Image 1 (spheres, rainbow, N blue to C red):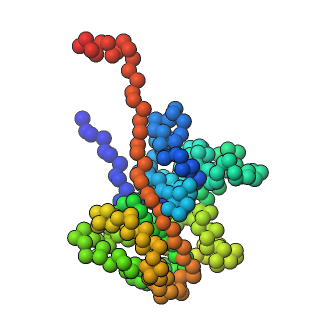
Image 2: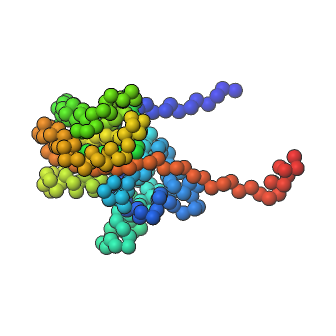
Image 3: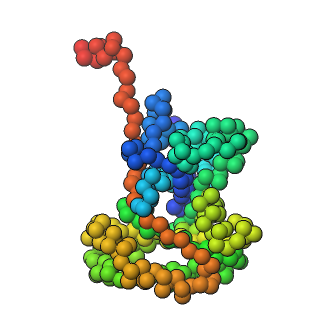
Length: 296
């Protein structure tokens, strides 16, 4: 009998989304009701195209969290965003502290219906790898730097991307020894993404600088995720010291100055990112079946 042909796995590194939300410091992970197969991913457990899932907390504001998902294809993400599962997913990821944030009429996610599901896409910052070559996973202590540039044709945009990447191929003062480590590889140290879909954070950050008349289609956002991995003997103490060191900060500002223009604005944040553990409740065994198994 001929074996059924398996569908081809899409090539490429997939699409990554960040959904920012409030997570109290007393909670280690977001959880969903126990009737889900996996309490840490909740309704995502049965969603097609969901790959690696991670949790991020901003270093300076640790109650600001991000639920990070790697999707197999953009189509998988779009199908999810138009489904009722997306609404259930977002209901457990409040944008603000529910005990303090005022609820504006019509803004609460619990009032969303399937007809409104497309509006939920504004909760997802959508990212695509600039290069398809292998890179490290975005995890551990990470410095996120986002650069806003005017929208342009593909050729011009590629040139601007290269200019920014070349300018940021540096080490902040005090961290130069990282390059001498035997495990150092640029693709394990800096990972670049283009934003293909903005969330509220991106619009708020760059609209306030560029002016409210600037719309998403008027700009392109390039993101660098700089890792501080222990495999290169980078300790949390070293990263903390660099973040506070005025000379190290000046290195970033000097690099940014060389790419303005085309860069019109840039923002930087520090994050701690961990892979979310997958958990499945223990399988329930019928007592009679268990007894028969013990006898056999």
